Image 1 (cartoon, rainbow, N blue to C red):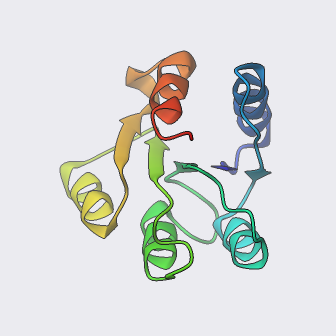
Image 2: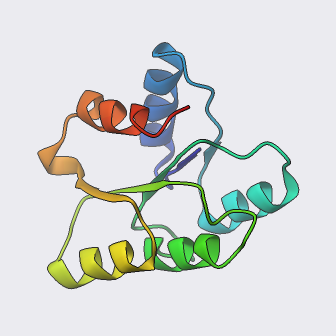
Length: 119
């Protein structure tokens, strides 16, 4: 699952993940993706999460996922344009598995990290 509110970037990420053999469900909002997770019997192997989302930030998303017993075991990789130590610490404490800065990682590098969680 990819949660990214920038539509063009979402399409690029989806295409790259599909190109390496992954099934992908993309969503432009945290709320929409959580609803889908709650309604779907097939859970993703990993969630690629943009931190800066409209309506719900990445921390709220992680907290919602980790408080839901059905969803709590899904690994979450947060990918963002900005980071401060406090935000990163809060995300990791809340249950995110990894925090990556977009500027420090090529798309292919992030995909390689995502693959480590993919079953």
